[in-house]
Every structure is written in C-alpha cells, then in structure tokens.
Length: 284
Ligand code: SF4
Ligand code: MG
Image (cartoon, rainbow, N blue to C red; front, side, top):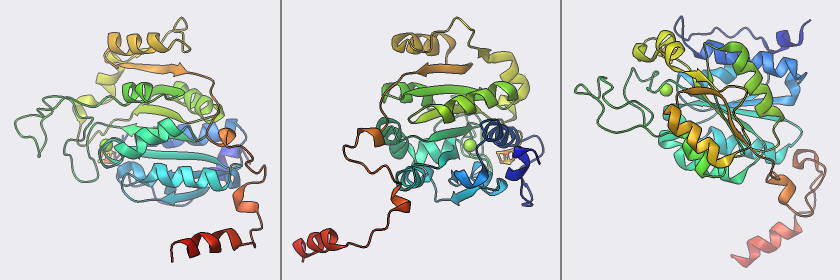
C-alpha cells in the first residue's frame, strides 16, 4: 500500500465542489507520505470553519478544536510529545480574527509545528461575510456597500513577530504547495504557510482564474535568508506571490529549555506528585 493511502479514511468530504481546501488536504497527505511520516506519528489540529474539517478527513491523530484555538492545542500536543509531527490548520477568520493573539504568540514562541492558513478572505461556513483578511470594497451580506477596512497581512505580521519560516502557497499550484509543506514540516521551529485557497461559493471574485493571473512565483533568485529583502519582496508584490519568503535558523522553543528531558512528557512515568503538592499548599 502506498503510504498516502494510510491517510485515507471513510469520512464523507462535504466541501463545495471546487473548494480550494481539497487541494490543501491532498497536498498535506502527499507531503506527509513523501516524508515517510506514518499516520501514528502525525497529529492534525484544526479550528472552526470550513477549513476545520480538514483534520477529520485524514486518518491520523487529530483534534477538532474550538474557534481560533488550533494553535494553543497544537503547541500543547508538541510540548507533550515532541516525537509527533504536528500540523495546525485553519481559515483566515479562525486564525486572524478570534485567533490573532494566539497566532502572534505561536510565531514568537517558535515551537516546532507547521501552521497551514487556509486563506479564502471570507467566512465560508457562516455564509459569506467579511473576515479581517477580506479585501477593501469586498461586497458581502455584512458589507452591502463594500468593506471599508484594509486587510491584515499575515505574512508581514509573521515577519514582524520574528517568524522563522514564512511561505505562501496556492491551491491551484499543487506541486509547489506540496514542496512548501514538506519544507515547513522539516523546518525546526514554527512555520507558517499562508495558502490562497479559493472559496468558490462566497468569494468567487478571488477564484482560481484571478489568482492564476495575479500571483507571481518567487523565482530562484529570491534570497529567502534576507530579512529586510523579505519585507521588500512582500511590499513590491503587494503580497501577491507564492513561494518561500523567509527562513532562518534559530533554536526552537524546546531546545532552549535547559535540562529538558530527552524523553517526551507523554512517555514519562510521573508518579512523584510531591512538587505539585507543595505548590498547591502554598496557595491554600
Ligand atoms: Fe469551500 Fe467556501 Fe464551500 Fe466553505 S463555503 S466549503 S470555503 S467553497
Ligand atoms: Mg475563510
């Protein structure tokens, strides 16, 4: 059996036909298979929204969490069991509205997980209203005269927060997306991929055709190690690109903790509760 088949399950996939999230799901499975990560060594954590279903469509460890909280859960899983490959996935509403605070601190904290931002610039599950990543002038049921706010820009926020791996992908460029997910998983530290993943039902204006015409691919000459160059590249392209924007080598959170056990917490036999008893007494 090909390794990708171990990630298949019988759960019915109910995304709309043509939804960009199918491509993200497929790219994730192929990336895991190419890296030869068995499904009992992977945990997929999602939040709420159409994107939140992704964890249910993969046969691996998983947790369908609460809105905007995929990252705290994913970080907790990685801290408890560093031997797992942990991937968090969520939409633009999930990650950069209610989840913004968690996203910024997860980037800064640099725990070794991968975050797939399935970005369609709209709330799909709740029938098409603006998210903080929606474009100016976007007309929806909640903004009949057009969105009057400018969108947040996740990759710029991640650069500012000290992110060590920042990339952008597109559901319509599957091979590139697979490669980016593989690199993100291999990267030692927090990695963000902002994925243009069209909502064909509620944001058809930013569908495959528009994105194919407007997204440039970062060429081979782009230096992903150049921090100030990454800002320049982003600003010059107005964020409309795919590829690896920035990557740096820095110790991840767990390797900065002196005296941390080599054995994952989940495998430690913790019977001695005396330190905790003392702590509790102190507050009685
Ligand atoms: Fe995908 Fe949009 Fe349909 Fe949700 S509403 S499944 S995001 S196309
Ligand atoms: Mg969305």
